[in-house]
Amino acid sequence: MSSTGKLTIDLDALVANWRALDAQTAVETAVVVKADGYGLGMDRIARALARAGARTFFVAVPKEGVALRQALGPKPDIHVFSGHMAGDTDMISDLGLTPMLNSTDQIIRHLEALPGHPFGIQLDSGMNRLGMEPAEWAAVRDMVLAASPVLLISHLACADDPDHPMNAQQLAAFREMTDGTGVPRCFAQTGGMLLGPEYHFDMCRPGIGLYGGLPFETARPVVTLDLPVIQTRMLEVGETVGYGNTFTATRETRIATVSSGYGDGIHRIMGPKTVLYADETSCPVAGRISMDSISVDITDLGHDPKWLRILGEDQTVDDLADNAGTIGYEILTAMGARYDRLYTGG
Image (cartoon, rainbow, N blue to C red; front, side, top):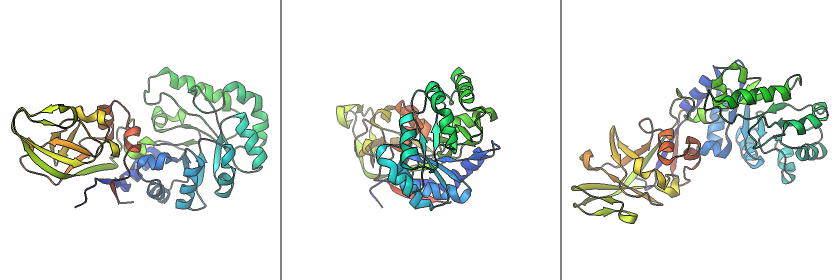
C-alpha cells in the first residue's frame, strides 16, 4: 500500500462532459487545457479529448503549448492566451502555436518577427484583464484585418451568474468591436455556453465544465481522491489533536491520520467544514490540516479503514471549494505532484 494519495481521473467522464457541452451548440467546441489540464495532466487530458474529436486547444503560455504539441502532434490548433512576448518567438514559430495578441506592441512584434504566421486577437469587452480596449482596437483594426487574423476572442467576467447585467454589456461590446470583420469569433467559456446561442458565435472554449465543475451542474464527476491511513490511535476524554489544540476529545475518540495536507492542495482553511468518506460514512476532520497529514475522527465508523476519500461524488470539487472559501478551479489546479495518478477510460 502506498503512503501517498491516489488521484483517479475518469477520462470517459471528461469526454462525456465535452460531448454534452458540444451538443448544446451548433459551432465548434474547443477545449481549455491550461495549468496542466487544470491540474489533472494536460497530455492525458488532451489526448483523450482529441480522440473524441476536439480540434482546437487553448493554453495560457507558449511553454504549455510546446508540451501540448509534443503530446498531440502537428494537426490540432493550439492557441495561446498570453499572446506573443519578446522571448516567445522561437516557440511560437517552431511549434506552430497561434498567439492571441493582446496589445499593439504584441501585434507589431508578431507581424515583424513572424510575417504570415497565424495569429488571433484578444479584445477587452469589459473585464479589464487581457486584450485590446475598444479605442486601441479601433486605431489598428483595418491594419490588423488586412493581415488576416484567424480568430477574435474575448472573455466573460460574470458568466457564472446568468442574470448579471455584465453579460449582456460585454456581449454588446464584443459585437460592436467584431461585427462585420468576417473573422471567426470565440466568446464563451463554460458559463458563456450555458447563457445561450447568442454567446456561441463560431467557437466555444469550455474549461472547468469539462473537469466536472460548476456552473455545468449536470457534469459527470471526473476526479476522485483517496488518501491512505498511515496510523490510528485512541484518545481519552480531554486529549487534543494537532497544532494549536483546536480539537479536544469529548468522548473516547478513534483518530485516523491520512497522508495528505496543504502541501498537496488540501487547503488548511477548509478543515473545519470538511469530511472524509469511508464508503458512505462521513468522518470529520479533527483539528488543523498540516502540510503532509490530516487527522480524521473515525469513531462512528466502527473500524479502521485503509483509505478515506476526500473528493468524489459525495464531496465534489465545488464542495471543497465552498469549504475553503474559494472556487473549484483553485482546488483542481492545486492538486499536488505527490499523488499517484490513475487514469481510467478514455
